[in-house]
Length: 635
Image (cartoon, rainbow, N blue to C red; front, side):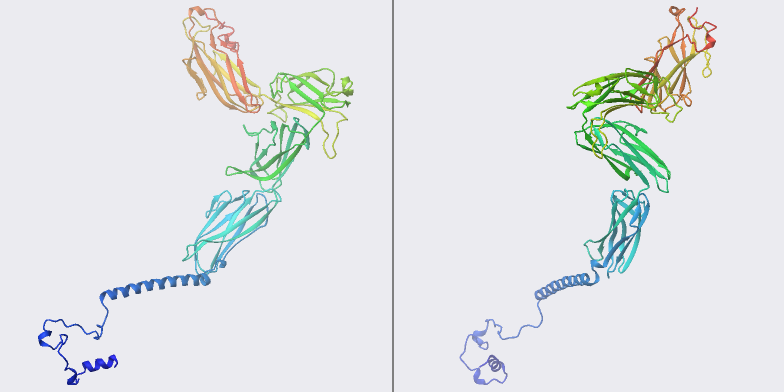
């Protein structure tokens, strides 16, 4: 019998009476005696209560929340995937740069940078980044920010969906002719609703077809170690615009020793020459003199650059390299001046030259010739004293040949000798020629023989020795004293009298002839019985007096070449007072000790000094004192 039938028979209202008539049991709920106080158990077949309990409701709610979160994540991922595949694609972002692909060095050029967003979502934090070589200098722009010497950024911010734009980028390429430079640009951005960075890039090659500066450098192909050489730098502005802030820079080879240059280099720097401005068609030349040493067969290269100074940095227009090969020569020559390899000379000085020669080879050399070229407008050729040899005044050349030196007919290995001659530097330096400053006395000794080989396609190997002596500027100091003076009037008896005060005016005047000089000062001591009154002319003169040491100094500072000779001279006047004591009766009382002018020559580098004698009341320059006998103290 099925459970359904059993249930139906048990609970049906019209159940047959005989079904309930069975033995009395303690489990019979109708038994009155035994059923009192016995709990009635719920029938297992009774149906569950309708609805959920509270705990069950909470569990269901939690499950729904978790399900919704999972569905949201799946939805976001699905949207992202769909956006990635449809609304956004990095290939739909573009950047391009266009403009002149052939430019002149130093010419301002403008390039157009186009960018485009073909996606269905916008861009955020977008920027255009530009990279360029060091020799390219961008023009200042309000929206352009330099990140480094070779890169910069244009900030775009937000770029709308399905939109485009452009920016303009200008600058100058300071590069030599034939140079190829690259301008690289990139669009950097984040897609809206994304956190990752994306980038697309493009570049443009630019050829520099010409430079506004024509630049040539000359130097020897071959040189005997230790010999003198010149680097000759010629430049010209072939452009249509004036060039400003031009400068030449040199990187010397190993073994090079700088001697001098024309024009002079920047103060304290022998590797840079400031040209300044150069108009269209303008030209110039720089000659660098020096000596170069090295082993036989070694190649020495000098690199010379010309360019502009931009924002405090040197930017090259053009570069040239000069290669010089060190070669050996069997002949050697060497010279000294006044016993040394003197590098400076002074006006009025005698120069004693000693030229030494030697055959360092293994064979005798025929018909040897030694020459000495002396060339400078400051030499007094009338004072030249030479033994043997001959002097060609037109060529400024001394020559010694076999008739003068019989050994030159065939100079045997290891044989050496020497020549001596002297010449005087002019006392008065001429300032009316083309050169008015920075004079150089050049002496070039050379030795040669027809037996010394000349390599094919090379210069003949001639041993030489060159000295460039810079002429020190001639400085002049005048020290004068007056009783009758136009600037500072004086008082007191003339001649001075014992126990009475008399004042005098002393003058210092400085003159400078041929070079710029600096740190110019004049100093002197004042005798103990003489005092400064404090009167000075001009009143703003930098004159200092130390009362404790009785010393006086005048700080002039810098003086240009020719100052005081070609124009007005710096001058100062100051007053002193004396009160002669009895023991100074009939004496010429001192007013000022020895005066000394010190200066630094900016061309030769030498420290210059000149002195004037002490001054007493015997003032010959004041003609009004001669007739009254004002040279000695009276009673």
